[in-house]
Length: 198
Ligand SMILES: C[S@@+](CC[C@H](N)C(=O)[O-])C[C@H]1O[C@@H](n2cnc3c(N)ncnc32)[C@H](O)[C@@H]1O
Image (cartoon, rainbow, N blue to C red):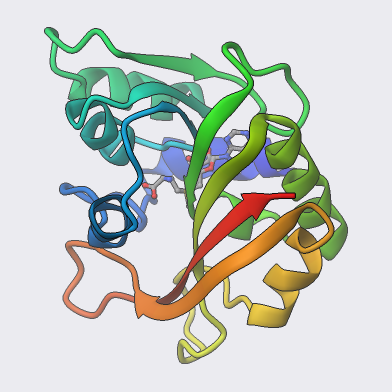
């Protein structure tokens, strides 16, 4: 089953274990500590929009995209009516042109890792690079291989699989072992990766 149909079914069934009520602390920490200054930003696979909306609240000029109509509908429900510096689109980040490109900063939490083959992940890394200005940054949060095997949960990515997909297009600034910022009691281990376009 293709990724579009897979996520359409998840949203239709209400199976959305990735949904979080507060911005992921990994995003907040990276933006505050790096620091990443407010800039023209894209979130790919934004889901219900919580992280994109947090970025907009920090004065980032945000474009957020998801392939699922339901996800964007939920994101627009979460969007404060007074917030004008964010734009949400239903589109396929891999295949469709992205309005507003190129960006200074691209964020994704759980979209890159949803691509199941090395070939698809490399195609996506190439598209992310093509959507960034020179020296632009990509902050990625992916499920880690160090999570125990379980029936549900984020994909378990080996760090080397991430590196293999991105290194032709990006300098790897950092890959840190952490866990997802989540409302769950036992959040899954994650990689937080910062890449800079070559
Ligand atoms: C694991 S969810 C994470 C959602 C959100 N980033 C979060 O953390 O709450 C992955 C998201 O990627 C979206 N997605 C999958 N393939 C996509 C594509 N080709 N283009 C845009 N979004 C896509 C899915 O619809 C889904 O909302």
